[in-house]
Image 1 (tube, rainbow, N blue to C red):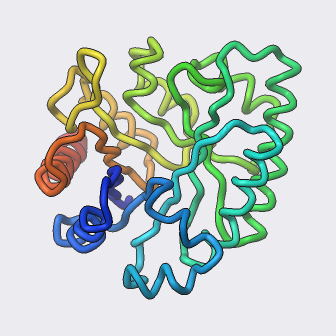
Image 2 (cartoon, helix red, strand yellow):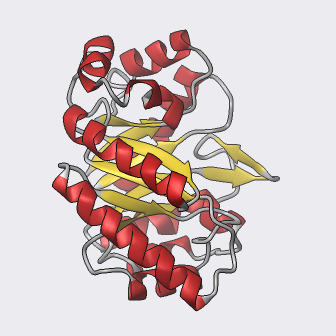
Length: 250
């Protein structure tokens, strides 16, 4: 399996630090936030020149929007860029409201299935990210979506903290039960209403690491660090935490 890091950046200097330090910290790649790539969607060669083009530099591209007409167009526009810069997947978190009817979920699943096929044609993949207070937040939402989506068209990115914030305590059970579609994992900690550096929140990751080992998962595991603290310190601590947890679960 490969370890990635993801972190919002507030300036070009901070983004430069992220891109230049992730590999020294031990990571195999980055999963990029929207503001770290969106200004160069039409110029992938410029993006590669600006940021070095090393393997894993843009392992994943994270994108959020409603799945309305404008959102579909914006998501579709990412696929050629993803293929050109070597991004293995576009990680999509929908900004559609929770509580969708069966018909609304069926339309959502059908649209995203079609986009998943387009992503593959462009040389990348589409992965659906669960998200608190949005259309895909509970196990029931996941069950409905994947029963309605075209098989193999869309993968699943499990986000640990968004599951916990949505009231799902058994994150390990989600990993086990959705192993057939699971293609990306975001490890994020959470406590007192705020995101935390891995190991500094209240989520018990021991069963999560055990489930990852149990299912023989070989994909990307990404520390999605949004605590707002020191970039390099958080990067190093998250890597140490993931490595220790995976080794202990062997």
